[in-house]
Figure 1 (spheres, rainbow, N blue to C red):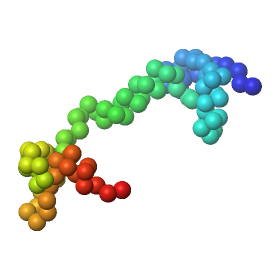
Figure 2 (spheres, helix red, strand yellow):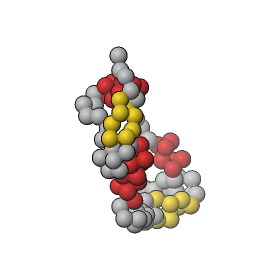
Figure 3 (cartoon, one colour):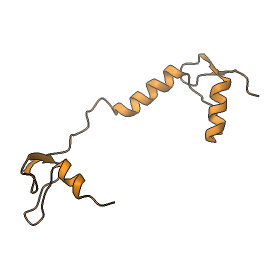
Figure 4 (cartoon, rainbow, N blue to C red):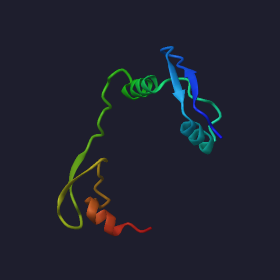
Length: 98
């Protein structure tokens, strides 16, 4: 049903093949538009979006605490308050109800 199709990359101007398999995949996902960039340009664009100028994402501050259940030292991504217990990952998992 689908046949390979030659498209022109909107970024670099090179020809690239939109394969029958890719067309079938696009159709199965309900995508209506064909790709307008070749694979290297899509990869570069995705990388540029993720880099956001090469700045590293700030890491979340972690706080060292002692688990109120087992006494093991652990780290949590929030400032604990004195009025609530804090648990390590294992103890928290045991207490979690689904």
